[in-house]
Length: 141
Image (cartoon, rainbow, N blue to C red; front, side, top):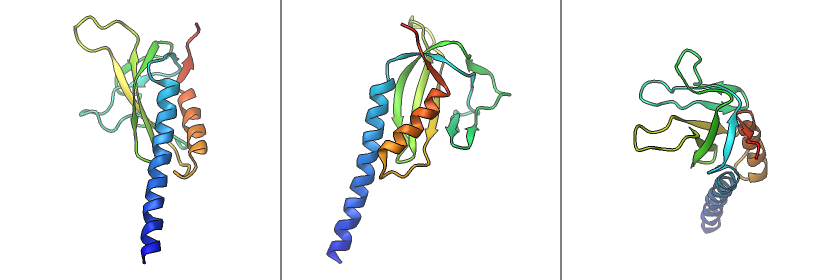
């Protein structure tokens, strides 16, 4: 009985560690960096939920009937990276403009969801970065 409990704790710790590793690597690669937006990002449903989401099946909740918040070709900055448990990350993508104390600059949070198992962070990172590259293009120096 004790060995089963130890195994369960080790499995939970392993899953959490993979999730933290994935988040840390996405933060390091994207947060605070400038990009060129590859697609239009639309406003979320009223109330802000659910966020636009990209996974192996494609887009969800990026309703083309909703107003465009950020346009393809815009210079954008990743202003936040947030954990989505073991399943992926959210990137907060904001238009690159200096804040002047007025209304906040336009931004959208996009969820990137992996189908790879949490015990394989390398596969998770690879899949998430592939999704992100469909949305963000490197900004020329």
